[in-house]
Image 1 (cartoon, rainbow, N blue to C red):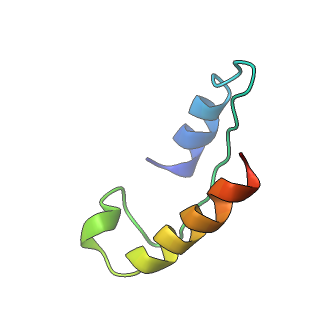
Image 2: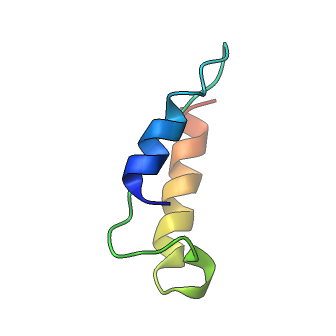
Length: 53
């Protein structure tokens, strides 16, 4: 999704205990798994998760 749509959608995640974060990976489409650089995205997610639990 375009970042503008992601930011709009994120405003709806307001339930208690909900953590909403947006990370834009420039020059990547929604099909992250078929593009190069997926290790960078996986590493980001693995670093992000423990700091937000």
